[in-house]
Image 1 (tube, rainbow, N blue to C red):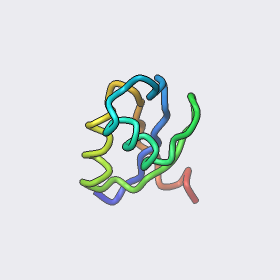
Image 2: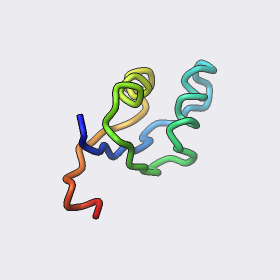
Image 3: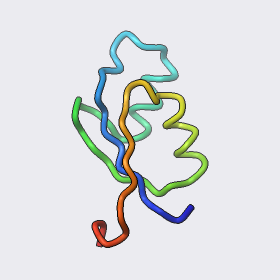
Length: 66
């Protein structure tokens, strides 16, 4: 899993469980529609699974990140 993932916050973490709010912050997402790029690792995948109903995930081509 050497790729990259683009994560976009689509729904607010307000009024969610504390672990979900903390996961959104740990991913580096602060505002709605904000996007960040992360390495595709098992730990990031686990975090995304926790907040899968709040975010959208896209694979990023290696050429786009250079």
